[in-house]
Image (cartoon, rainbow, N blue to C red; front, side):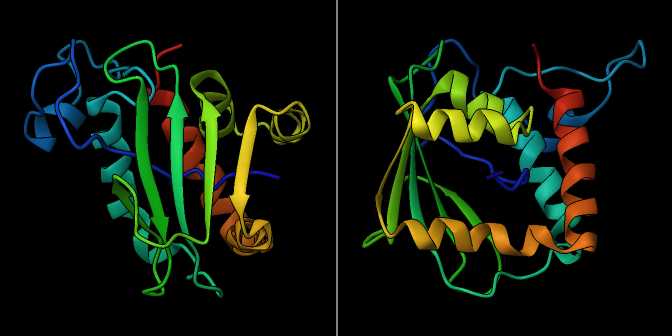
Length: 175
């Protein structure tokens, strides 16, 4: 099981320890030394960078074949609020990733910060299975809907795009 690498989450309120969001060009831009900036996983600047990637790749990702509405809860972040809340909604035919939760979700996924980072940044399918069987990922609701999110990634063209996006996410994510 892998999680699509274009997934991003945002906060519904400012995060303690991080300044208010700057314009996207400042956040995504390269530092003067020519090295790519690194952002802490799920921090506001990291989320802005992932959103920019999502916008860049939106027309290269195969639309989901099944409508899925999922809420995501990430616990134990080393900064800000105790829980980071996000949602995934494919009812429109496109992958919509938003802050906060949707009403009447098909499922809710809850995991800790380290596991979420391993899944979204390292894209380690073995870690995903271990996390599910080890109780680090809890899914309530329709598990088959979660599997439906994975189906487009099994096609060669979608898998290549997902790998490309995952590599770019790894490049700007701090260790």
